[in-house]
Length: 340
Image 1: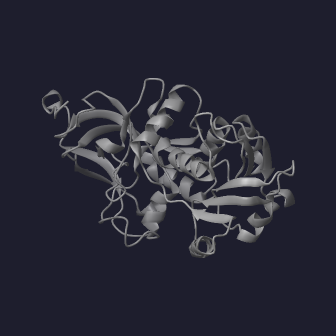
Image 2: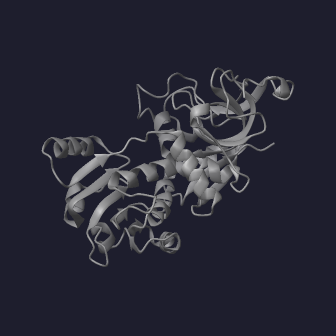
Image 3: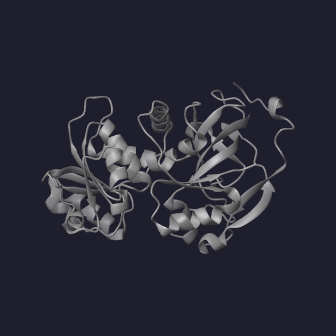
């Protein structure tokens, strides 16, 4: 369908509530509630009335300046990219959506926009959300679930029934990426060993993990499988674990896929590559795409995947959600809901 501005004329206000920061640093105290103009959908874009957004660690890392000079593109900046809502207008060239469609989207990382009542999304990173999937559940998917999916594919997991029965370790399995990774690994027919804190052991088991280690115990710190299995791959979702800890628990061609690599890890991965090492550390940078998001939304619809929600906050209390993410102890996803 081509641009359909007529049905929404008069329904979209001129301004909206949003939360932004205008300088690096500051944490939750650096967030400001503002009234700003509602953006408009340009070519191949959709204007969404947002219902929910999920906060990822990368959001406050951008605020801290850890991704300078790449992100944000300019200040002030409305953070967060993972959203769900309803299409209220479409720009020229949009054919697959119309006003009224419920959707899940990943906004452009350079421009953000998720902590607001309205946001503009690219058609190429927006998918329809069936009625079985709530806005809160859907908004958890774009970064966290897609990262888990791409990590598992890097290890060799397949989701069409043709894959090998690999052994996989998932560290920090009770976090946003980890909880999706456990579920997706089981869907791919993998044997899953997971690490998490003691309070989340039963939750991680309930989502399909075959073995769960409390990371504070000696066994958990050494990452050794209780059944003695070596790992074909590791979905590494935490920090502070050295290669020397992974090396003895990997199969001869095991891979450690690191979603938060530091400089030392990146150097190690380059060394492994140039020396043709069979055991490898592989940094993963998410490659957002529509096909993965459609696949994940479909799994949610069919009840094969669930979004574990740590906490929900209204937009008016977004500073509490921001602090919750920075603390680093969330079990699952932190959701901001656009009330009113």
